[in-house]
Image: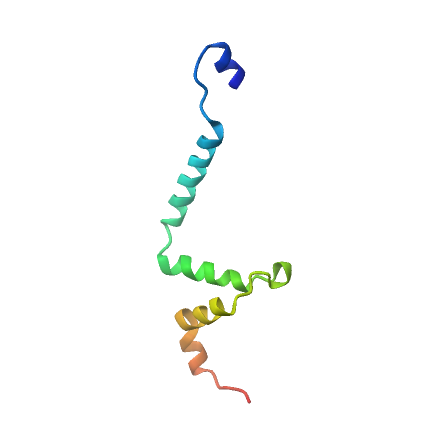
Length: 81
């Protein structure tokens, strides 16, 4: 395409910028379909990913995950000694 534009003396588009814009537009459209709470749950859940020996493991994220989404479950379960 670049050669064609050059040959026709037409200003070529920056294809990287176009690709980035299209990907960003598509991504934001998909993200907007989910609530903020759902996105936060997904993001905090990445800390439990076992890939690469739990490289994303983050105690603070696990605590937030429990506090915001699973607190009732933890409060109703019997504690084991």
